[in-house]
Image (cartoon, rainbow, N blue to C red; front, side, top):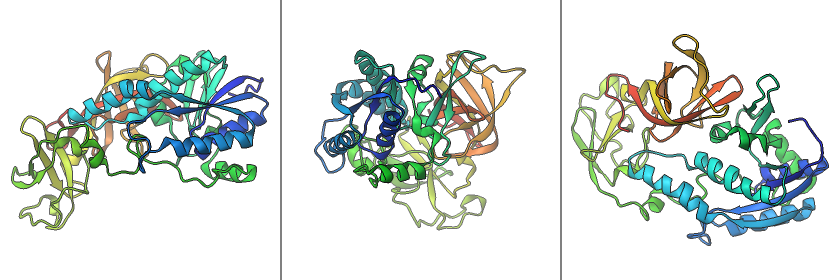
Length: 385
Protein backbone atom coordinates (compact mmCIF):
# COMPACT_ATOMS: atom_id res chain seq x y z
CA UNK A 1 0.00 0.00 0.00
CA UNK A 2 2.05 2.93 -1.28
CA UNK A 3 -0.79 5.47 -1.43
CA UNK A 4 0.14 8.27 0.99
CA UNK A 5 -2.97 10.38 0.57
CA UNK A 6 -3.76 11.72 4.07
CA UNK A 7 -6.27 9.52 5.83
CA UNK A 8 -7.93 9.21 9.21
CA UNK A 9 -6.28 6.08 10.63
CA UNK A 10 -7.12 4.39 13.91
CA UNK A 11 -4.11 2.53 15.31
CA UNK A 12 -4.30 -0.28 17.83
CA UNK A 13 -1.85 0.82 20.53
CA UNK A 14 -0.93 -2.14 22.75
CA UNK A 15 1.73 -0.49 24.87
CA UNK A 16 4.45 -2.32 22.93
CA UNK A 17 7.13 -0.89 20.69
CA UNK A 18 5.75 -2.26 17.39
CA UNK A 19 2.40 -0.48 17.57
CA UNK A 20 4.10 2.65 18.89
CA UNK A 21 6.41 2.89 15.88
CA UNK A 22 3.43 2.11 13.62
CA UNK A 23 1.57 5.15 14.96
CA UNK A 24 4.66 7.37 14.64
CA UNK A 25 5.31 6.34 11.03
CA UNK A 26 1.75 7.15 10.03
CA UNK A 27 1.84 10.50 11.82
CA UNK A 28 5.09 11.34 10.00
CA UNK A 29 3.38 10.60 6.68
CA UNK A 30 0.79 13.26 7.42
CA UNK A 31 -2.14 11.07 8.38
CA UNK A 32 -4.66 11.92 11.08
CA UNK A 33 -3.86 9.24 13.66
CA UNK A 34 -6.01 8.18 16.61
CA UNK A 35 -4.87 5.51 19.07
CA UNK A 36 -7.11 2.83 20.54
CA UNK A 37 -6.08 0.66 23.46
CA UNK A 38 -8.00 -2.62 23.45
CA UNK A 39 -8.78 -4.21 26.80
CA UNK A 40 -9.54 -7.86 26.00
CA UNK A 41 -9.28 -9.57 29.39
CA UNK A 42 -10.33 -8.54 32.89
CA UNK A 43 -10.98 -11.64 35.02
CA UNK A 44 -7.71 -11.20 36.93
CA UNK A 45 -6.42 -8.10 35.24
CA UNK A 46 -4.60 -6.82 38.31
CA UNK A 47 -2.54 -9.98 38.75
CA UNK A 48 1.21 -10.12 38.33
CA UNK A 49 0.78 -12.29 35.24
CA UNK A 50 -1.76 -10.43 33.13
CA UNK A 51 -2.07 -6.73 33.77
CA UNK A 52 -3.36 -4.47 31.02
CA UNK A 53 -3.14 -1.47 33.34
CA UNK A 54 0.62 -1.19 32.88
CA UNK A 55 0.26 -1.60 29.12
CA UNK A 56 -2.33 1.18 28.97
CA UNK A 57 -0.02 3.53 30.87
CA UNK A 58 2.72 2.74 28.35
CA UNK A 59 0.34 3.26 25.42
CA UNK A 60 -0.84 6.60 26.82
CA UNK A 61 2.77 7.73 27.29
CA UNK A 62 3.51 6.82 23.66
CA UNK A 63 0.45 8.74 22.46
CA UNK A 64 1.61 11.79 24.42
CA UNK A 65 5.09 11.71 22.87
CA UNK A 66 3.75 11.21 19.33
CA UNK A 67 1.04 13.81 19.84
CA UNK A 68 -2.11 11.79 19.17
CA UNK A 69 -5.31 11.08 21.04
CA UNK A 70 -5.87 7.70 22.66
CA UNK A 71 -9.09 5.98 23.66
CA UNK A 72 -9.46 3.03 26.04
CA UNK A 73 -12.01 0.51 24.70
CA UNK A 74 -13.18 -2.60 26.51
CA UNK A 75 -13.68 -5.65 24.27
CA UNK A 76 -13.49 -8.16 27.15
CA UNK A 77 -17.07 -9.41 26.71
CA UNK A 78 -16.57 -9.95 22.98
CA UNK A 79 -13.26 -11.68 23.63
CA UNK A 80 -14.76 -14.04 26.19
CA UNK A 81 -17.65 -15.00 23.90
CA UNK A 82 -15.79 -15.24 20.57
CA UNK A 83 -12.28 -16.34 21.56
CA UNK A 84 -11.97 -17.67 25.08
CA UNK A 85 -15.08 -19.87 24.95
CA UNK A 86 -13.78 -21.52 21.77
CA UNK A 87 -10.34 -21.87 23.37
CA UNK A 88 -11.84 -23.85 26.26
CA UNK A 89 -14.02 -26.00 23.97
CA UNK A 90 -10.99 -27.01 21.93
CA UNK A 91 -8.91 -27.94 24.97
CA UNK A 92 -11.78 -29.93 26.45
CA UNK A 93 -11.95 -31.85 23.15
CA UNK A 94 -8.28 -32.76 23.48
CA UNK A 95 -7.00 -30.35 20.84
CA UNK A 96 -4.52 -27.48 21.10
CA UNK A 97 -6.05 -24.26 19.71
CA UNK A 98 -4.28 -21.06 18.72
CA UNK A 99 -6.32 -18.20 20.26
CA UNK A 100 -4.17 -15.52 18.59
CA UNK A 101 -5.52 -16.56 15.18
CA UNK A 102 -9.12 -16.31 16.39
CA UNK A 103 -8.44 -13.04 18.24
CA UNK A 104 -7.23 -11.39 15.05
CA UNK A 105 -10.24 -12.54 13.04
CA UNK A 106 -12.88 -11.83 15.71
CA UNK A 107 -11.54 -8.95 17.82
CA UNK A 108 -8.70 -6.95 16.28
CA UNK A 109 -10.07 -7.00 12.74
CA UNK A 110 -13.78 -7.25 13.51
CA UNK A 111 -14.84 -5.67 16.82
CA UNK A 112 -11.95 -3.19 16.73
CA UNK A 113 -12.40 -2.52 13.02
CA UNK A 114 -16.13 -1.89 13.48
CA UNK A 115 -15.40 0.52 16.33
CA UNK A 116 -12.83 2.37 14.24
CA UNK A 117 -15.27 2.73 11.36
CA UNK A 118 -17.80 4.26 13.77
CA UNK A 119 -15.13 6.81 14.66
CA UNK A 120 -14.93 7.81 11.01
CA UNK A 121 -11.69 5.98 10.21
CA UNK A 122 -10.66 5.39 6.62
CA UNK A 123 -8.55 2.45 7.71
CA UNK A 124 -7.00 0.80 10.76
CA UNK A 125 -3.37 -0.03 11.42
CA UNK A 126 -1.64 -2.45 13.77
CA UNK A 127 1.92 -3.38 14.62
CA UNK A 128 1.87 -6.73 12.85
CA UNK A 129 4.83 -7.87 10.76
CA UNK A 130 2.90 -8.48 7.55
CA UNK A 131 1.98 -6.55 4.41
CA UNK A 132 -1.08 -5.89 2.25
CA UNK A 133 -0.88 -5.51 -1.52
CA UNK A 134 -3.63 -4.72 -3.99
CA UNK A 135 -3.32 -6.85 -7.11
CA UNK A 136 -4.52 -4.74 -10.08
CA UNK A 137 -4.87 -7.83 -12.28
CA UNK A 138 -7.28 -9.70 -10.01
CA UNK A 139 -8.62 -6.71 -8.13
CA UNK A 140 -7.98 -8.60 -4.89
CA UNK A 141 -6.07 -7.64 -1.77
CA UNK A 142 -3.22 -10.00 -0.97
CA UNK A 143 -1.75 -10.78 2.43
CA UNK A 144 2.05 -10.90 2.21
CA UNK A 145 4.70 -12.02 4.64
CA UNK A 146 6.54 -9.36 6.62
CA UNK A 147 10.00 -8.59 5.25
CA UNK A 148 11.66 -9.72 8.49
CA UNK A 149 11.51 -13.53 8.23
CA UNK A 150 12.16 -13.91 11.94
CA UNK A 151 9.11 -11.81 12.86
CA UNK A 152 6.64 -12.51 10.03
CA UNK A 153 3.11 -12.77 11.50
CA UNK A 154 1.06 -13.56 8.42
CA UNK A 155 0.42 -17.00 9.98
CA UNK A 156 -1.76 -15.33 12.64
CA UNK A 157 -3.59 -13.19 10.07
CA UNK A 158 -4.54 -15.89 7.55
CA UNK A 159 -8.26 -15.77 8.41
CA UNK A 160 -8.66 -12.12 7.37
CA UNK A 161 -11.14 -11.45 4.58
CA UNK A 162 -10.99 -9.13 1.59
CA UNK A 163 -13.05 -6.51 3.43
CA UNK A 164 -10.79 -6.68 6.47
CA UNK A 165 -7.58 -6.49 4.45
CA UNK A 166 -8.88 -3.61 2.34
CA UNK A 167 -9.22 -1.56 5.51
CA UNK A 168 -5.99 -2.63 7.22
CA UNK A 169 -2.45 -1.32 7.16
CA UNK A 170 0.74 -2.86 8.56
CA UNK A 171 3.47 -0.21 8.19
CA UNK A 172 6.23 -2.08 10.02
CA UNK A 173 5.75 -5.10 7.79
CA UNK A 174 8.24 -3.36 5.51
CA UNK A 175 10.85 -3.20 8.29
CA UNK A 176 13.06 -5.53 10.29
CA UNK A 177 12.62 -5.63 14.06
CA UNK A 178 16.09 -4.18 14.61
CA UNK A 179 15.08 -1.12 12.57
CA UNK A 180 11.86 -0.73 14.57
CA UNK A 181 13.89 -0.69 17.80
CA UNK A 182 16.30 1.85 16.30
CA UNK A 183 13.43 4.13 15.33
CA UNK A 184 11.87 3.86 18.77
CA UNK A 185 15.14 4.92 20.38
CA UNK A 186 15.64 7.74 17.87
CA UNK A 187 12.14 9.08 18.49
CA UNK A 188 12.59 8.84 22.23
CA UNK A 189 9.59 6.59 22.82
CA UNK A 190 9.24 5.68 26.51
CA UNK A 191 8.77 1.99 25.66
CA UNK A 192 11.68 1.74 23.19
CA UNK A 193 13.38 -1.00 25.22
CA UNK A 194 10.24 -2.74 26.45
CA UNK A 195 10.45 -6.51 26.18
CA UNK A 196 8.21 -8.13 23.57
CA UNK A 197 5.15 -9.82 25.03
CA UNK A 198 5.10 -13.61 24.87
CA UNK A 199 2.39 -16.19 25.34
CA UNK A 200 -1.36 -15.82 25.24
CA UNK A 201 -2.58 -12.46 26.53
CA UNK A 202 -5.00 -13.86 29.12
CA UNK A 203 -2.41 -16.30 30.46
CA UNK A 204 0.65 -14.07 30.38
CA UNK A 205 3.78 -15.53 31.95
CA UNK A 206 2.00 -17.73 34.48
CA UNK A 207 2.30 -21.55 34.39
CA UNK A 208 -0.11 -22.75 31.72
CA UNK A 209 -1.39 -25.76 33.68
CA UNK A 210 -2.15 -23.55 36.67
CA UNK A 211 -4.33 -21.32 34.52
CA UNK A 212 -6.15 -24.05 32.61
CA UNK A 213 -6.93 -25.93 35.82
CA UNK A 214 -9.20 -23.05 36.86
CA UNK A 215 -11.52 -23.63 33.92
CA UNK A 216 -11.23 -27.29 32.88
CA UNK A 217 -11.86 -30.31 35.10
CA UNK A 218 -8.90 -32.66 35.04
CA UNK A 219 -9.40 -36.42 34.82
CA UNK A 220 -6.13 -38.24 35.56
CA UNK A 221 -5.31 -41.42 33.68
CA UNK A 222 -2.52 -43.72 32.52
CA UNK A 223 0.48 -42.84 30.37
CA UNK A 224 1.37 -45.63 27.95
CA UNK A 225 4.31 -46.14 25.62
CA UNK A 226 4.11 -47.31 22.01
CA UNK A 227 3.99 -50.92 23.19
CA UNK A 228 0.88 -50.32 25.30
CA UNK A 229 2.77 -50.57 28.60
CA UNK A 230 1.73 -48.22 31.39
CA UNK A 231 4.74 -46.16 32.46
CA UNK A 232 3.16 -43.32 34.39
CA UNK A 233 0.08 -41.22 35.14
CA UNK A 234 -1.14 -38.02 33.51
CA UNK A 235 -3.11 -35.26 35.23
CA UNK A 236 -5.68 -34.80 32.41
CA UNK A 237 -5.39 -35.00 28.62
CA UNK A 238 -6.26 -31.32 28.17
CA UNK A 239 -3.01 -30.31 29.84
CA UNK A 240 -0.76 -31.89 27.20
CA UNK A 241 0.01 -31.18 23.56
CA UNK A 242 1.57 -33.33 20.87
CA UNK A 243 5.34 -33.10 20.81
CA UNK A 244 5.47 -31.97 24.44
CA UNK A 245 8.62 -33.08 26.24
CA UNK A 246 8.61 -31.24 29.56
CA UNK A 247 6.32 -31.96 32.49
CA UNK A 248 5.62 -35.63 31.78
CA UNK A 249 7.12 -36.93 35.00
CA UNK A 250 8.75 -39.96 33.38
CA UNK A 251 12.23 -38.71 32.52
CA UNK A 252 15.08 -41.19 32.87
CA UNK A 253 12.79 -44.21 33.09
CA UNK A 254 14.28 -47.44 31.76
CA UNK A 255 12.43 -48.82 28.78
CA UNK A 256 13.63 -52.21 27.56
CA UNK A 257 13.27 -52.55 23.81
CA UNK A 258 13.04 -48.82 23.04
CA UNK A 259 12.50 -48.43 19.30
CA UNK A 260 14.86 -47.11 16.64
CA UNK A 261 17.96 -47.39 18.81
CA UNK A 262 16.73 -44.99 21.47
CA UNK A 263 18.69 -45.38 24.68
CA UNK A 264 17.05 -45.91 28.02
CA UNK A 265 17.46 -42.22 28.86
CA UNK A 266 16.29 -40.81 25.52
CA UNK A 267 13.63 -38.11 26.05
CA UNK A 268 9.92 -38.87 25.95
CA UNK A 269 7.45 -36.97 23.75
CA UNK A 270 3.65 -36.89 23.69
CA UNK A 271 2.54 -38.68 20.50
CA UNK A 272 -1.19 -39.31 20.88
CA UNK A 273 -4.22 -38.68 23.06
CA UNK A 274 -6.64 -41.59 23.30
CA UNK A 275 -9.78 -39.74 24.38
CA UNK A 276 -11.93 -42.87 24.52
CA UNK A 277 -9.67 -44.59 27.06
CA UNK A 278 -8.30 -41.37 28.62
CA UNK A 279 -4.78 -42.52 27.83
CA UNK A 280 -1.79 -40.34 27.02
CA UNK A 281 0.58 -42.10 24.62
CA UNK A 282 4.26 -41.15 24.70
CA UNK A 283 7.19 -42.30 22.60
CA UNK A 284 10.94 -42.16 23.06
CA UNK A 285 13.15 -40.21 20.70
CA UNK A 286 12.54 -36.99 18.74
CA UNK A 287 12.33 -38.82 15.41
CA UNK A 288 10.02 -41.63 16.45
CA UNK A 289 7.72 -42.48 13.49
CA UNK A 290 4.59 -41.69 15.53
CA UNK A 291 5.73 -38.06 15.62
CA UNK A 292 6.22 -37.77 11.85
CA UNK A 293 3.44 -37.12 9.34
CA UNK A 294 3.36 -36.84 5.56
CA UNK A 295 -0.32 -35.98 5.10
CA UNK A 296 -2.47 -33.58 7.10
CA UNK A 297 -6.24 -33.09 6.92
CA UNK A 298 -7.58 -29.62 7.57
CA UNK A 299 -11.07 -28.21 8.22
CA UNK A 300 -12.77 -24.92 9.16
CA UNK A 301 -11.01 -23.25 6.26
CA UNK A 302 -10.66 -19.57 5.49
CA UNK A 303 -9.23 -18.13 2.26
CA UNK A 304 -7.90 -14.60 1.82
CA UNK A 305 -9.25 -14.44 -1.74
CA UNK A 306 -12.63 -15.78 -0.62
CA UNK A 307 -12.09 -19.14 -2.31
CA UNK A 308 -9.48 -21.93 -2.21
CA UNK A 309 -6.55 -21.87 -4.61
CA UNK A 310 -7.06 -23.49 -7.99
CA UNK A 311 -5.73 -27.03 -8.24
CA UNK A 312 -4.74 -27.76 -11.85
CA UNK A 313 -4.54 -31.50 -12.34
CA UNK A 314 -4.53 -33.57 -9.19
CA UNK A 315 -2.59 -31.18 -6.98
CA UNK A 316 -0.67 -27.93 -6.75
CA UNK A 317 2.82 -27.34 -5.41
CA UNK A 318 2.76 -24.79 -2.58
CA UNK A 319 4.23 -24.46 0.90
CA UNK A 320 2.69 -24.54 4.35
CA UNK A 321 3.29 -24.06 8.04
CA UNK A 322 1.64 -26.43 10.51
CA UNK A 323 2.85 -24.30 13.42
CA UNK A 324 4.08 -20.71 13.71
CA UNK A 325 7.73 -21.30 14.61
CA UNK A 326 8.76 -23.31 11.57
CA UNK A 327 10.07 -22.74 8.07
CA UNK A 328 7.75 -23.10 5.10
CA UNK A 329 7.53 -26.75 4.08
CA UNK A 330 6.94 -27.64 0.41
CA UNK A 331 3.67 -29.51 -0.02
CA UNK A 332 0.94 -30.48 -2.43
CA UNK A 333 -2.46 -28.91 -1.87
CA UNK A 334 -5.22 -31.47 -2.31
CA UNK A 335 -8.73 -30.09 -2.54
CA UNK A 336 -11.39 -32.15 -0.79
CA UNK A 337 -14.68 -31.22 0.87
CA UNK A 338 -15.94 -27.61 0.55
CA UNK A 339 -14.83 -26.82 4.08
CA UNK A 340 -11.62 -28.82 4.09
CA UNK A 341 -8.45 -29.84 2.29
CA UNK A 342 -5.41 -32.05 2.68
CA UNK A 343 -1.72 -31.28 2.48
CA UNK A 344 0.82 -33.85 1.32
CA UNK A 345 4.40 -33.20 2.48
CA UNK A 346 7.33 -34.91 0.71
CA UNK A 347 9.34 -34.35 3.89
CA UNK A 348 7.63 -35.59 7.03
CA UNK A 349 6.41 -32.91 9.44
CA UNK A 350 7.07 -33.22 13.16
CA UNK A 351 4.34 -33.36 15.83
CA UNK A 352 1.50 -32.01 13.69
CA UNK A 353 -1.08 -30.99 16.28
CA UNK A 354 -4.89 -31.07 15.95
CA UNK A 355 -6.35 -27.66 16.76
CA UNK A 356 -3.38 -25.71 15.45
CA UNK A 357 -3.57 -23.88 12.12
CA UNK A 358 -2.16 -25.12 8.83
CA UNK A 359 -1.43 -22.03 6.73
CA UNK A 360 -0.79 -22.17 3.00
CA UNK A 361 1.66 -19.97 1.04
CA UNK A 362 2.43 -19.31 -2.60
CA UNK A 363 5.85 -17.70 -2.28
CA UNK A 364 5.43 -14.58 -0.16
CA UNK A 365 1.64 -14.60 -0.52
CA UNK A 366 -0.40 -16.07 2.32
CA UNK A 367 -3.40 -17.81 0.75
CA UNK A 368 -5.26 -18.79 3.92
CA UNK A 369 -5.64 -22.07 5.74
CA UNK A 370 -7.64 -23.89 8.36
CA UNK A 371 -7.62 -25.92 11.56
CA UNK A 372 -5.73 -29.20 11.63
CA UNK A 373 -8.08 -32.16 12.14
CA UNK A 374 -5.56 -35.00 12.14
CA UNK A 375 -2.39 -36.23 10.51
CA UNK A 376 -1.38 -39.60 9.11
CA UNK A 377 1.78 -40.61 10.95
CA UNK A 378 4.31 -43.20 9.89
CA UNK A 379 3.51 -46.77 10.99
CA UNK A 380 0.56 -45.60 13.03
CA UNK A 381 -3.12 -44.81 12.83
CA UNK A 382 -4.16 -41.15 12.32
CA UNK A 383 -3.79 -38.96 15.35
CA UNK A 384 -6.87 -38.52 17.47
CA UNK A 385 -8.86 -35.45 16.56
